[in-house]
Length: 257
Image (cartoon, rainbow, N blue to C red; front, side):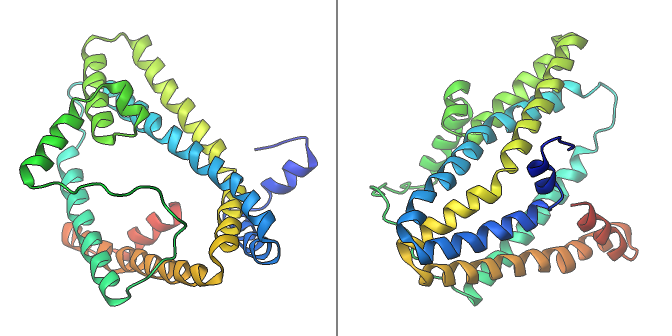
């Protein structure tokens, strides 16, 4: 994005990943050298996380609503194979994650939390009841409380209603709203370096480098699982579906991602 401001132009020439890495290093240095400043900088991390948590439910709601509303009757959505592959891929990723967590157990030192004395569900009936109640929760409350089950349910219902009864103008408004919220998310993501800086500096200031070692191990396990899924599991899934060399397609997906 072009800008007449030389500072913004210089920042735009540096990739977001590099900016996040710089924020990570600066956060470690500030938290170690000046814990008081590191704790104060934690406000930046709280603001960043708060903004993401605030916009995420709205993003899911408008994207799903717009996608359902824009679907035209008679068009092949190929949703069944997509859902099957999604479920199978998610299950495979969960299995890999569980095996990795058992092979490389990680202990994290967290900051003091509030009251967490919440009773677990007493049985499957209570779990199913909670799930059903979340489905029919007030849509405003679902957005406010980040109840994604309720958000998805109401987005599907509203999108289907718009598809059948909404005018072309109304459906275009839904699509424009989805693009607008997506743009807001991109703006928030641009502040990720500051958010990472605040989160890391406050964590180092409050818990020291012992916590950082745990996070680094957890990050290594996460990245290892992601690479295994991307380079082993996904190619196997592609090979079972198209019966040809999967790596060109997989590497194309990785490059685009």
